[in-house]
Length: 401
Image 1 (cartoon, rainbow, N blue to C red):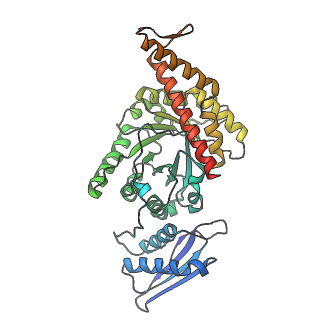
Image 2: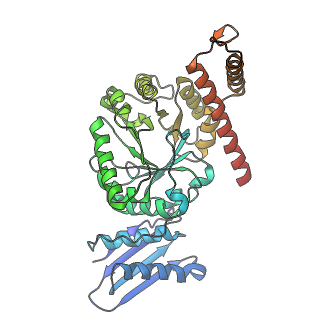
Image 3: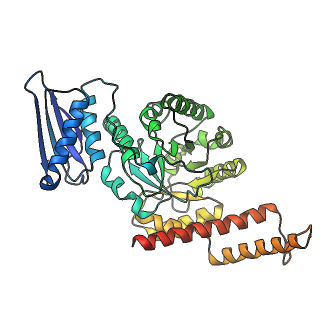
């Protein structure tokens, strides 16, 4: 019986295709086809042989068609093929990068989230270069059902062995209860965030957190894992307040408009009138709970003009960010959500007026004819914090350029 894993089309760059045939005798035969065979053939062979020995496979034919795959990809593809035939609880784990076990904070800026299909390594390789606030390694809708097990191993390896250059590492698991199985491979690799799709009741979040705690206890892991539920149905919208308050480790909620509009039988438009109610309900639930409200993705990657209009409309509603399905969308999203110069100047004036009144021992603070209360002061400080964060991001981009 021959088992295949990986992708083999001409478009599948940075990937490999593996065929694995266990034998009863005859020893090991490892064949490699690669454009970089001269430089990396020996290292690919060694990695393949190490994996076979790790799983105690002494008689087999293994063929690898390499299209520039990195070691974490090759290892995942070989392991996926082996586990399709041989039931083994063992995992072949590559070393973990020190940066990939660093926790993130609750209030981290999450203006942009770049979706990366969990079974497409070519999209993972350079994702960090584009400076998204977070990357979402997706195990749900972007992965075909027949490729789910392969994607889990690939995402597991990426979490351990690939650098995303400081972007927050998120994983969108499958819909509960199937997504609980994803956590078994994902949580031991210390992801920063677990994204729960199609949330409709607090019990789903409870199940995820209970599973996370069980795995962390077994693996002796203490890093926080934040939760981001995604609302994608009419029922989810009506449960938004319950979901926002369902757990202490929820840092944001997302509205998923493709599934939501399908659920209510509406056509999604760029104006967004059909989803205004849902977005408003979810946004208000987030603000009441003190968590970030994140808008849906914009699906036309060529239309940056309408993306800009959508992002500015989203910001004006009070959203803290939105999703990106292509790297070229990130810069536009950042520009739209970044504070404008008038907003920055007004924030500075508010804080200066407050500081001056405080020095003078005044109980009432005003700027012109407007009173400055605590919520206004907090909003002003948040504006300056965002401006500083975006300035730092621009500096990092310029250095990379």
